Every structure is written in C-alpha cells, then in structure tokens.
Image (cartoon, rainbow, N blue to C red; front, side, top):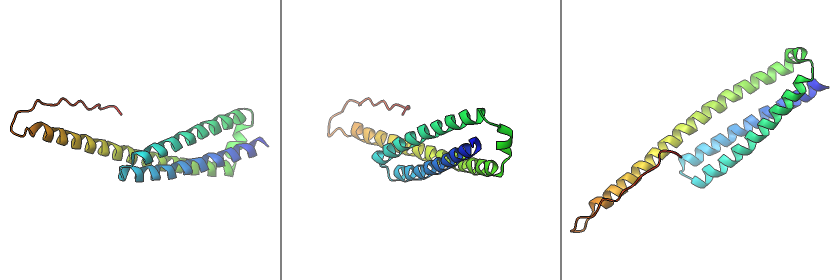
Amino acid sequence: MDSRIVLEIMKKEVKTLKDFQKILQEERDAIISFSLEGIIQENNRKEELIRRMEYLKAEKEKIISASDQESLKQSENWQSLSRDMERTMEEVRMAMEKNMKLLSFSIDHVRSSIEHIVGFINNTGYGRKMEQMPLLISKVM
C-alpha cells in the first residue's frame, strides 16, 4: 500500500517538474520579448510549483521512512520514475541556465541603453554647458 502511494507521489513530482519546464519556456519567451509583466507572472507560477514540489517531496520522504525502502527502490516502477525525474531535472536545469543568461544579457542591454541616453542628455547643452547628471545603476536585481 505504501509503495503505491509513493509511486503516485513520484508521478505527481514528475508531472510538476514537466509543468515547471513548460513555465521556463514561457518565461524565456517573456524575456526575449522584454515583457516585464510576463516575467513576473511566470516567476509567480514557478514559486507556486516549487512550493508544490517541496510538499510532495516531504510527503514522499515521510512515507518512505515508514516503509520498506529496499524493496520499493528495487521495483521497476520506482527506477523508471527515478530515471524520468532525473532526465526532466537535467532539462529544467539547462532551461534555467539559458533563462539566467538571457536575463543577464537583457539587463546588460537595458543598462547600456540607459547609459547611452544619459550620456546623450549630458552632452546636449543647447549652447550652454550642462552639469553632468549622476546616475547610479544597481548591479543587484
């Protein structure tokens, strides 16, 4: 009975990871289109799924600690789900790295654009010398 419950939880974990992977794809699309609203929305969805995954993991560990772990981990269903979970985790990790690189590029692009605009404003005096405008851009997001 316990092993069946654990396997059902593992199936939910894998499904949640795949949903997380889809959200990462949608987040990537929002980053590429410079949609701050989309990035925030996808980030909120990711937080919800992370909480769900934490809950599922805690439930699974509670049940596993009270059952026969060796026979459970030897079952073909466990091994199959474990492989699927590992494969999906690797895909999620790669997608997160890509999104981080895209965000970094986007932040650098925005920073460069702001510096260019401020430089243009500072150099435009319309016949008189203008004071330099100080601009501090935080590197922490």
